[in-house]
Structure formats: structure tokens, C-alpha cells
Image 1 (cartoon, one colour):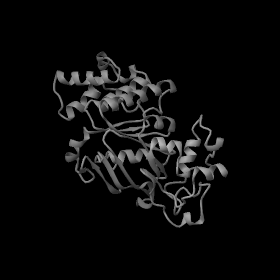
Image 2: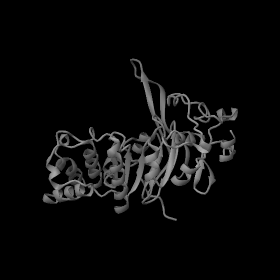
Image 3: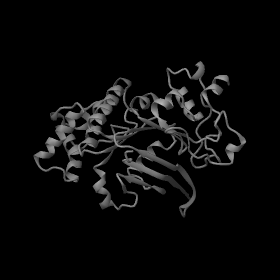
Image 4: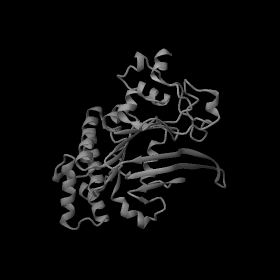
Length: 330
């Protein structure tokens, strides 16, 4: 069995809430709570959930753009959680991020040559004219011309800017990429182009990827496995094909039923009511219980652990009887 390229164990991210003249801590926002994950080489792990579920925070923790409150991250056998800035730099070129907004992720005062070439020089991958050659190769990989490197970001459309952001991530030849909502800021007509580009590049370059999105249709298209987050906790994780065909957790089912064009199991839709609770004051026990149509009194007493319900399929729910037959009969 192939060892994971990226592993997270017990990942927790709490942001302090401070108030008053003395700036005292009066509470904590529990953005991510006890998340375990493992991503195999060449795999795409989709991460889904509503806004406020902790998806982006988790992605930044894995790259150590945010320091975890607790837990550890292992990259290719090395625990990078405790590495200092100088030690971490050696791993940065192998772990890159594609940000959500292509308009704000590019410096408007720098040419594309300077923006993309900066990473090449920082990691000592090339010098002089070789930097331009590396930048041109990265631009060609995303469907842009060498001449584009002399322009400024304002000269490009939204779709082209996202291609530039992808080129900037690829120019240092990473092994792992976190793509944080990479198409949500783009027109629908452009989204398919970017998704197809990412899928082609990850196959050609054998990239490992964490793909974060609230768009389940996109996640289903590109992911090998899917991790479902709710209020910072993992509700379900499993192969994409099986999870979308028959989700095991009621939250996963509600998310999939909300996708336009899907008519739900048995021709019915089961949409969630209310809004996601505040991560500063999450419900006791199962954090999903306040919106769950199948909640029991016991759900308030304990935090359900992830249990393997079928080979490679896990859910965090105390009930075992939420199957397709019950849903159709309900």
C-alpha cells in the first residue's frame, strides 16, 4: 500500500476572541476541530461544506500558512508542523496554493514575468535568462503565450488571471497543490475551462491535490475522494463515486440534494433548514444535530467518532440505520 504524501492528525484551529481595554480572551472560534486526513500521491481529495465549515482554514493549515492550535502535518514522511521558517522554506516549493480570487492574488504593480519569476529566484531554481524560460514554460502549460509575461495583471480577463495564478503555482514544480475555490470567482462559461485545465495538469504532472469547493458538481468531476466538513468537523469521507451515489451521513445527503439537477433519492429533495451555527458557540455533542432530521437525544451527549461503515467509507454519526431504504420510506 502506497504511503500518503500528506497526512494530518488531530488538526485543530482555534482563533481567540479578544475584547476590552486589556485585550483579554473571552472566547474562541473553533474553525477546525480534530480533523484527520491522508492524501495519497497523485490523488485529488475534494473538501466540501457550507460557508463557515472550515474548508479554507484546513487547507491553509495543511500548507502551514496557519499555525495549528493542535495536531501535526506530515509531508512525505517529514513532520513539518514544528519546522522553523528557514527549515520550512525547503518544503515550500513542493507545496503550493491556488487562491480563490485571481484579481487580488496577483500584484497589480508587477509584470507577470516578475510575479511568476519571483518564486523561481527565491528557491534558486534558475538564474538570468533561465528564469524567463521557466516562466514561459509555465505560461505555455496553462495555455498562455511567452509574450504575456511582459504585461500587467490588468491586461488579462478573470479566466486568464486564474491561469496565471496556476502558472505561478506550477513554475516551482510542486508535488502538492491546495486549490481553494479556484473557479468560484469566475463566470460559468470559464469555470469548465479551468477545471479541465487543472485535471489535465494533475494527470500530466502527477500532482497531488486538495480541491476545496462549495460546488459539489465540480468536486464530483475532479475528485478521487471527498471529505465533508461541517462546523470544523469531518462528517463523512470516502470515494467520490460512492459518496455521490449513496451518501451515508445526513449532512452529505442534504448537500447533494441541494445540487441543481439532482432530484434526490426516490425523487424527493431533503433540504436543510436554518443556518450553520456560530463556530464560537458550537452545539454540544454532534455539531450537526441542531439541523439534522434524524437527531436523537443521545446526539447531544457525545461527539460521534468517524467509523468505517464500508471499505474506505467513514461517517461520524451514532446511527447505523440511515440507509437508502429508510430514506425512501420516510
